[in-house]
Amino acid sequence: MARRRDVAIGSMFVGALLVLGVTERAFERVADAQAANGMVDAPKFEVDPTFPKPLPNHWQLGETIGVSVDAQDHVWIIHRADALLPGEVGLDQNPPTALCCSKTPPVLAFDQAGNVVAHWGGPGTGYEWPTSNHGITVDNKGIVWIGGNGAANQQAGTGADSQILKFTQDGKFIAQFGHQGKGQGSNDTENFGRVAKIFVDPKNNEAYIADGYGNKRVAVIDADTGKFKRYWGAYGNKPDDALVASLGNYNPELPPIQQFRSPVHCAELSVDRFVYVCDRPNDRMQVFTEDGKFVKEMFYKKKTLGDGSVWDIAFSKDPQQKYIFMADGKNEKVVVLLRETLEVLTTFGDGGRQPGQFFAVHSIAVDSKGNIYTTETYQGRRLQKFVYKGIQKVPRDQGVVWPGK
Image 1 (tube, rainbow, N blue to C red):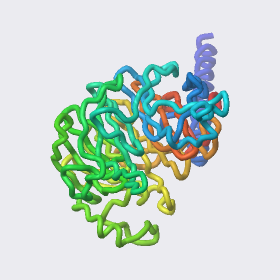
Image 2: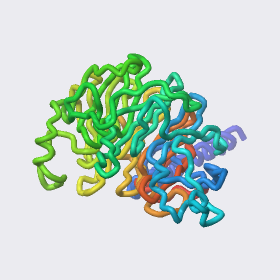
Image 3: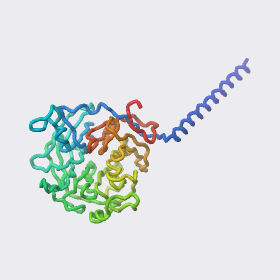
Image 4: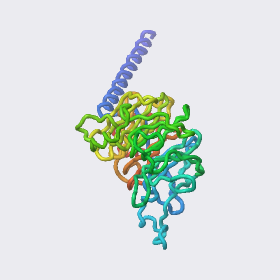
């Protein structure tokens, strides 16, 4: 009986090993199949089609060209109300031509439920509001920074936006650096040149300026005084506006130029003190030390013409900022990169106007929970939220990340 018991136990053990072996091979086959189909471990997101809630007061958004998340996870956007056509804002006409709609104040903040919790902005006393506002950043002190990329308009009597502005979160003016119409090019240390975006470094109390649509540089200033501290162009070179003008439009068949083209669309500082710069029309991202020494670059969809492929970036919220989320407004995608190598892991989104699709996805930000927020310019004109679902197996191209897909 003891022998039969031992034989039975041995048979069960062998059977278990066989089952484990079959199961292991099955898992290996699944992993191999996933790899063959382009599956990868990466952050997964789902669009939240209920965010934000409908705007009050029959408000209508214009070109929505900036997004930032503050310490309370309030989501701040800035848009261009003047981009709306008279027929879109009938309530604003004199006399009103319809029961809807009306221009929304340029600056809005939303809570996590999608409710509007702040709204203000526009011309006022003591500062020069941009003729075309562009980019919004809420820094570690809760100060709201705004840039502008308006060109000179002789008919309207306005110069190019050469200034950046600082406000409290309730819209009280704090400071202006630079003066409208006074910019003298990419080597000017008093004014800017149609700024795209601002990043504020709390450690050194410095602001990194993606400068921008007129100038072709990254500028670093004291965040309190606005005093210029340093600036640089592509590959760490001195900016040369005349050289860039002589080279003409981007041509993917030619060697990469040694200067930025306009616009220099973002300049973001990572936790390990590297500056990531969006050279949008050149379809590339360049990485520098905080002093402007060139480190490396990556190209993305190099045959993208016109608006380019590298519009804006945000870092993931893990302590190492393992991932970069990049807005590609020409190809209508959000691109997920491994920050250490700049390898593209996956993309999500597609062209269209339904939730999870994009028309000119322009700016991107991440909240403390890892959720992504995007804004769309041109006729996109909206804010979207993408809920973080953790690290999962996802395809290289996820398409529209609809809930439950």
